[in-house]
Image (cartoon, rainbow, N blue to C red):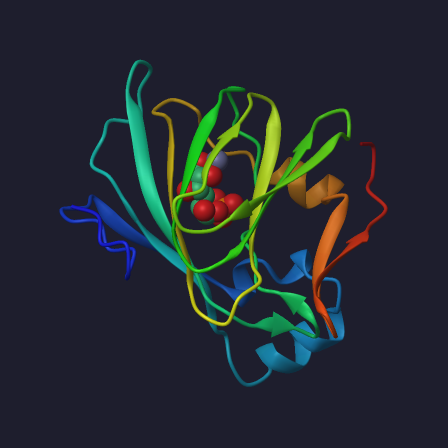
Length: 181
Ligand code: S6P
Ligand code: ZN
């Protein structure tokens, strides 16, 4: 059972939690990261994993709950990743509002609004990262191949072509130089 309001999946194989210290280098304002980590290490996002074998032929799924907030003025986000075996993924918005950013290996960029009932296709070979641009938790479901695997290093090395900041009139996307894309 999926609880659309809380993101709880039950039964679940387990829960995962990512704190700021797990992704300190992802944010543009390294000084804001340092000063926050000096007295706190907040949970940036968490979620629940389905009990599905991580093997070919299976479809596995997990929920994610991204907390609301900013580092400096950059919205809380997920680390972002490629799948080790290039394969597609399906995202379903459950609660809250945000963006799903996607970037191909050749540097093409796409974004989709992630909101309740949004059904989004992530094509094979596109890295993906979610951003919470609202004031409440952003909650979504992701469905992907059991043997897809996760490659975080490529995204950490190359970066994403766009960052999302809180602006006076709402979320602002700003282009970012990326390495090798
Ligand atoms: C899995 C899917 C999502 C993310 C989750 C956390 O393929 O894309 O479930 O794993 O949103 O993001 P990240 O980038 O830390 O794995
Ligand atoms: Zn994924």
